[in-house]
Image (cartoon, rainbow, N blue to C red):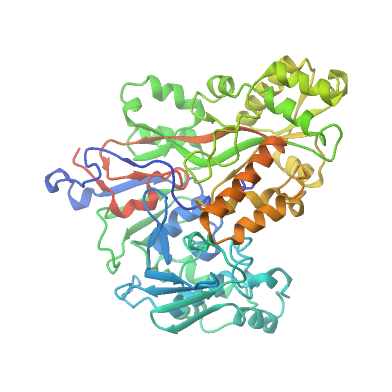
Amino acid sequence: MHLRSGIRAFTLATAGIVLATACGGTSGPQSQDLASPDKQVLNVNDGTEPNSYDPTQQTYTYEAGVGREVFETLLKSNKDGTDVQPGAAESYKVSSDGLTYTFTLRSNAKWSDGQAVKAADFVYGYKHLLNPALAAGYVDPFFDSTIAGADGYGSVDVSSASAIDTFVSGLGLSAPDDKTFVIKLQHPAAFFKWVVTLWVASPIRQDVVEKAAGGSFSSSDTTKPEVWAQKAETIIGNGPFKISEIVSKDHVTLVPNPNYWGGAPKFTKITEWFIEDANTAFAKYQTGDLDAMTVPLANVDLVRNDPKLSKEAKVYPKLTTFWMTFNAKRTPFDKPDVRMAFAKSIDRDKLNKQVQHDIQQSILSFIPKGMAGYDPSNKAQAFDAAAAKQLLQKAGVSASDLNKFKLLTRNTTRNKTLNQFIVDQWNTNLGLNMQLEVIDSKTVTSRIRKGDFDIYGPDGWGADYPDQQDWFDIFFKASCHSLNWGCVDLPGYDDLVKQADTELDQAKRNADYKKAQDQLINSAAVAFIFQDYEYNLIKGYVGGLTITAGDDQSLPGNFFWHDAYILKH
């Protein structure tokens, strides 16, 4: 998930830590401790109204917060994020060459209207996702670069129904029978088991879509395919909850799916509110109108000093890393020693204590703590002002050469405060007189896409799923001016990562990814600065929550809400 654009994923699989909240613990509550069914109500803030309730057409975390409750994918993450576990599929197998995934659906999997979930529903859902005319935001790079026949996704004439039909019919998707779904891949991909956990990879019923649309429609139509997802009564899902009410610009209400194979959840109602102002949400939490929320940084000290609120606070890591980007197309940032000098002249611990309320954690690596591949042993970018100055001397660069450069940042309070601290660090520790350049977000986006900057930040990445494959390609040479904003040149890096991506031996994959990460760190491709941690408030009567690093924003524990409950209070 690229944090600049807000696109998620990050998905979207869990990892990191697990916290079982309240007195219920991991063994479950005693029946006498549970609130009555009419009190099993959870109120949370989703922040923003989803653009769509069609899971395949969702892109952002606030949309996923609804989609993953109403629909269930083939597989899902286990609670500690170490592997996948069965979802709508009870099992799966992979061919010896790694090119064919065969999923066996649960015999008791049903839609919210009671009909059986069939393999054809997954074929239709995946084809709906991969219909180029609908331009789903999560196709690239997860599905078009893995599923056989999908590599031509970006070149299909979306105005031509016949071209779309030809493309979609050629995808490596099939249903030999009602309970068998087969996916063929372009190349081996050990990470593909995580791709199918993404909430966009949900099944969709063709009859539901066509009934709402008033009949069949052209594959190039962009309106009729989405009519079904606009009203609660026409949204039929296979997840633990179903939508009972949609009030535009206000909230969406979820109730249990009576036909869910996993049994009824304890919650009898979940209301996800669309409160965009964080301070308003904070006030509603204090009055009891919200049961959980993410605390705005400005309110962290207030929470810490409040005897009641401080007991309800939960801090946990996100699989998210932030960094500063150097424009390697501009001299002297094309020199690794210069980039490393800037990287080593940031006191990250002081940054987090003085600017970020000591919530975020310093990091010197790309892969964050809580994910396979996290390696704190490489300290090449560790704070060392004296060594940083020596690197500038070695590169033959003086302070006067650098004073003309600026750090470009977006015009938000947090970005301005954070980046002013970093500029001050460079000025103090390198003897410079650099300035901060603060501009509106739209202009910043335009400029970094054109390479019109000296240094830019903070930029970052959050995991779509806990596999390293999801990370390293953003620094490919081909990603220059798209994700690799600095266009840094890393000899051999692309081939190394591609080799790891298609390798089926996990030990070999890990070794190659480690080499790639060391190359990023040692060349100071970017200056890694901190890992994101989330500071949440959760009422003490909300029990059984499994809080993970993959939870959707402001929705703590939502990967496993099926197992949570309200205690008497």
